[in-house]
Length: 68
Image 1 (cartoon, one colour):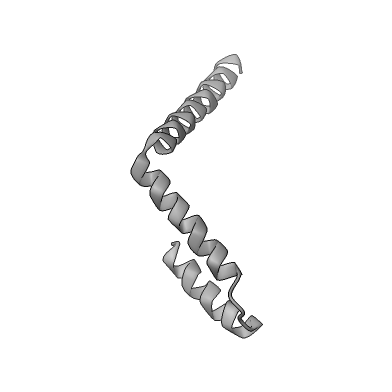
Image 2 (cartoon, rainbow, N blue to C red):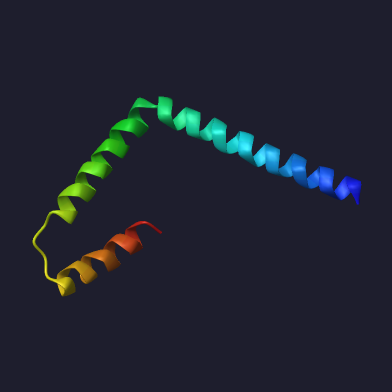
């Protein structure tokens, strides 16, 4: 039982380190930051559009497909 628990803890720790490393790399990347800022700006602009609920639903469907 101990070996299984230890192995699971090592797996969790490894995944956490990997996530932290990738996050640090992304936050230091100028290209990623620029793209992220542009995406945030586009999202704010979209939210401020005067759309009907039906228009917003259509746009959301297209955005969901884009994000896949």
